Amino acid sequence: MSEGTERDLAARVVELVRRVAGPAAQAEVLVTRSDLALTRFANSFIHQNVAETGTTVQLRLHVDGRTAAGGSSRVDPDGLAALVERTRAAARLAPPDPAWPGLTAPAPTPAGRPVDEATAFASPDERAARVRAFVDAVEGLEAAGYCRTSYRSGAFANSAGHSAVGRAAEAAMDGIARAGGADGVARHSADRLADLEGAVLGARAAAKARAATDPIELPPGRYEVVLEPAAVADLLQNLAWYGFNGKRYAERQSFAEPGVAQFDPAVTLVDDPLHASTLPFDLEGTARRALPLVEAGTTRAVAHDRRSGAEVGAGSTGHGMAGGSTFGPIPRNVRLLPADRAADVSVGAAAVGAGVTGAVGDPDTAALVAGVRRGLLVSDFWYTRVLDPKQLVVTGLTRNGVWLVEDGVPTRAVRDFRFTESYPRALGPGRVLGLGRSPVRQPDRSDGSWCEAPTVRLSSWNFTGGASG
Image 1 (cartoon, helix red, strand yellow):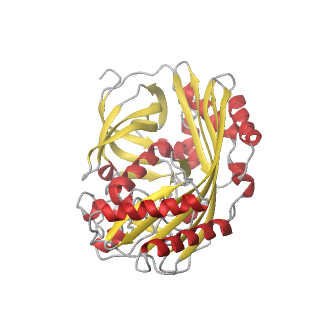
Image 2 (image 1 turned 90 degrees about the horizontal axis):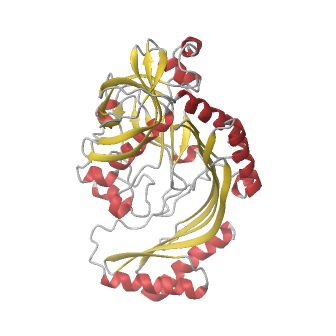
Image 3 (image 1 turned 90 degrees about the vertical axis):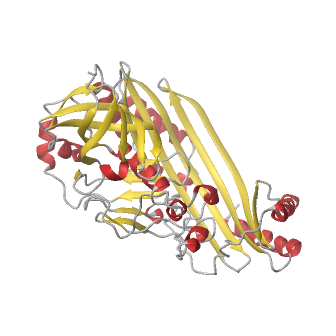
């Protein structure tokens, strides 16, 4: 298939709706081709290589004051006709939809970033070469993880005459190394497979695993922390889902208060889909663009699709997505912009040399750790769950390495903690003590989603349980 074929399919479904439901029916159609490939490894060898190619057609129909949606992976004439008939039948049974926001009007759509063809159609051998480099770099430790590549090509059309096309490609690698029951992790997502360096990631994961062996247990309590990008990504994802979500904001279930300085002045957050290769339009055909969420600590905006935007008298910000009517529009490409200036990196690197070898894997983290009198260096969070959506109080566990920092030096590995913390409060005024200069893009589980963050130093983090309970 090509973009032209997908555009033709979308236009064909719009015409089928016109024939079946009449000229007054309003329809929007998204046709997406996806090529997804995954090379997975465990016990230091590749045990699975899978790939799938498919095309999906998503239709939303508003007719006689009622709205219904449907989807199909069949693109033959009979399959498209069945999709239209099925969605039309569902619309007849749907309740009235007085909040229907209408269709996206014809408007230009940005071209998006160029697609790297070598990534879009990478071979299993090319992914396996990065796995081999990762495994070689761990130097005998047990290694596991994956290397993936993806390509998406999409076309949108609606009965108002709007259309858009776009392409996107992504590569990602996520791997762990294990030493004596301790794990070290390294992750990276990029527009080009060539930018994934398996040897660099493997060496980083192995160094952290070796540094995390023989941990001590510390009592729960509030500690100053340095959070590495993998942990910061969890903060950004939960802020996006529960805070900068236009539906939750309209329902007064979000902490967000546009115009209020809710965060430390060091915090600037932007949802920036075109910073990376991605489809340049959303499910409703609205052009995607950078959306400042927080500027120098002040909350500026939340994400909207057409429905949530209409409810608060605003327009769509390009965040229409499948399931949006239930979950709301969610920023999926959040960046925490790095510091303009960082601490003296050479000082930090020198200090780390005296501590636990391998605990600090980059100059950014070294510089921030060097300023900590007593605190914790945290690699990663996992199994996080929201306890209080309004205040965004989250509980979860540390993972893949925690270290005690004393007088700027990581001195001992620490057993994992449970924490309970309000994410907005942890990033609140006066609480961010430093940001790194080099953000790392972290892959997400869903294709097209990612977070990009530097290492962050915070004045306080609430650890509520240790390894013993």
